[in-house]
Length: 339
Image (cartoon, rainbow, N blue to C red; front, side, top):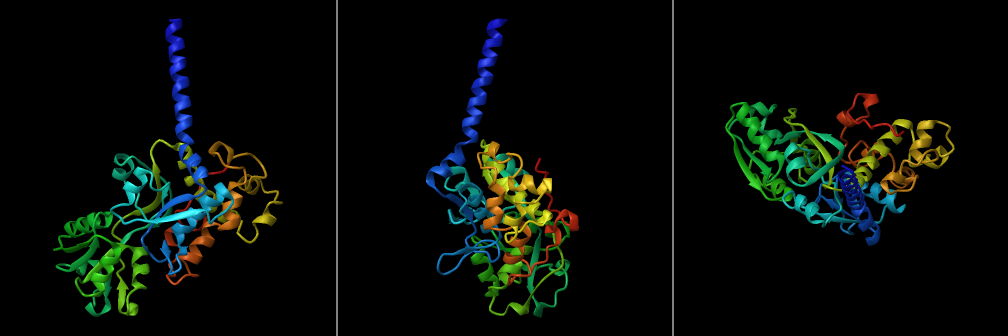
């Protein structure tokens, strides 16, 4: 019996050591490289897009910068890797990128069969339709027999087929490998309708030569919780990616901004003190300093600030907060407590 107990203890210790080694692997690799490799969109206004000089902007881009700031105290220590929808998961699995933040929908099959874990949802979305106003279509239910441009290898393609089948509508889908090819085909008149996530519709409409001649139909036909993605087997890294988002949400809820974060270091509010690391050591179990959240907010801002300047009223897209408002304001964005 004693031998069995000792053997079990040894096995437990080995498992614990192995788990500890695995849990620190990605963070250690990132620190050794000196930068974060972030899988990004090939170009989607408001979410992830480089300009002619290679400067990246967008909601997803700022999420990556916030992670880098938490680790390095420097939001510029990020290398953005543009990935197509088809290639994005392979890039995470192979280690080409440390994290994927690329308007990617969290689904059961992706979460359980690809060797991936999803972090926090940084944007609640849903699929919609873009049509020419000249067609005088007011509802997606009037799209019987319409040809629809859609990107291959996405939940968008599956949702489209489900919606038309459920509503007994004839579908003529026209598929393309990339989002760029899809929107160009729509503009060229190769199809009547363009479908993707509603956020993407507003972004892609800006690229059209005569954007005002196109409209987004009112129907939202799916749930598209867009989140960050990391590899299985590294819980510590997932915690870092996840809690960076939650810290930015908590900061907005507590009124901590990029402009006032230094002043808020003197706050006596216990929630603010825990968030900014002046009380407790909540960053240390993740391999970060206790002021990791302070660094993210100082360099990038809280969630509301990032939303407004990238996709909200301070941006060309002018998307309303809607479901992405804080839970205290009728939205779905809700962070677990820091304690």
